[in-house]
Length: 403
Image (cartoon, rainbow, N blue to C red):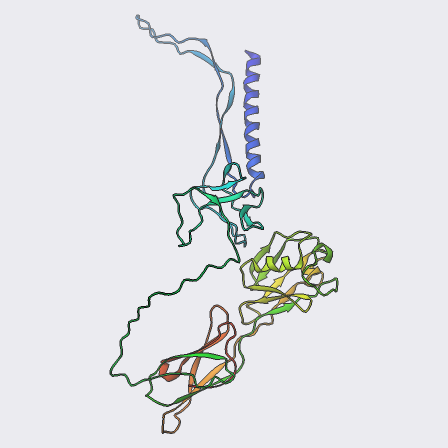
């Protein structure tokens, strides 16, 4: 009996050591994509009966409980918790996550596997694959009419980038309109755009039929923050140079947008070329455009406006990192593009009715495109009935136009 007590205690220590192993594994995998934690449950291993129980006697004596001694414990099960994990943005467009129940199906060509890890990328043939295993993601591909045949067998997901979809000719057009018989307004048309960059004029002038509007634009449009790198090797970049040949030893780096939006560029290595670095930045899908310019790499903010608000920063230039070796950031300093400016364009309009003297000048509204930051349209002409528009990717410029 004495040694039995020790054996019972040892079984408890061993069981809890096993539990600590599971907890340690949970901690070790806290950053593992798609990992689900485990939980240990225990049960009593064996009970030894030293004396059986007796029922109450006929003469009035009470019953006696059995005498039993537990001989320790053992692991009953290891339960995997399949609850919803935290979703985290990675900045990589091919990374996916499942919210709720379900699994991704991936294949090695022979067997299908199920996973919650959505760290995917595209291989050279356009297959969506798991970055860690190379297994191809399975699913349904839309047919030529855009329908997804969910009842058919799943297959490799392949995204054929660069392949155009044949156009289909329009076969029927339906047009409904209602003309106002009492209307006295005149349809606006562009007579001369001058140097303003205006492309189209739409609408009806509400201030009388016949006549000419002269619109004058003064000032300058918004500009984008941009900066040209200066690689420490001092060589004109052709795009084929590897990062290792340029002295880079740290291949992951952050781009900070607008002072506080941090985006991490991943997936580069020693043999990655300069053009692959440019592509990796552009593939982030953020307001940054990278390109080769004059033998260096240029970064440009896609949104035009005040550089103190709309800027790009590569932090903490150090020997071996991309901010230092490719863009020329000083050691301990930053590579910054913050020279963008806000629009100062203003517009005034003068209407001259046919056969009459010009009317007084009126101030018009120059509007900023919310997607580009450029001033690209003018409102308020013809008592607000006319909309003047330029190229949203280029914007308007100072000058005079006639409508």
